Length: 155
Ligand SMILES: [Zn+2]
Image 1 (tube, protein in one colour):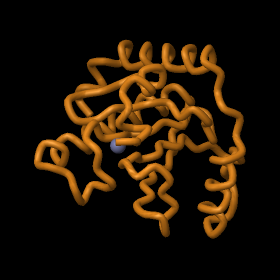
Image 2 (image 1 turned 60 degrees about the vertical axis):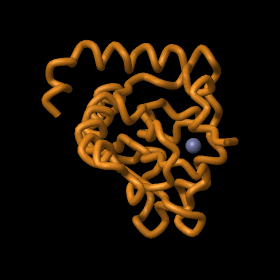
Image 3 (image 1 turned 90 degrees about the vertical axis):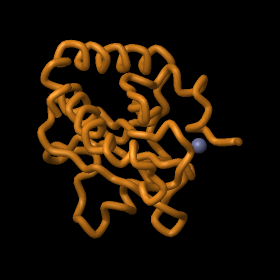
Image 4 (image 1 turned 180 degrees about the vertical axis):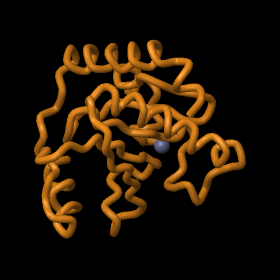
């Protein structure tokens, strides 16, 4: 299947955290600092297709990925966003929740009405990270995961 998120080799450089069912990757064109994605290992379009294991694991895994992203971005606030289907703005048809650490007057700070428009524009126009920028970022995310391992396992 020609799916960017089913291609494990392509995700190797972006991956910083995973378990049996899910992978957390750093976005190649981060809209804000700490812009990560939670994706399923299986090809599904949304959580409506989750099996029992994925349903049980989803919140704990997402909490851990969010914790790491917030530490990395030094933020307390975040958006956790799923776009399912073309009319909702889904690009890659493989479940991916965006984790967007948020700060006052950040790159996405607009009125609520304009949020999705701003997000879509920025997703297409942000600079793509170089291989070394991605490697540095993923290394820092992995260090945060390791440093806070005990706390993360409680989430
Ligand atoms: Zn896929």
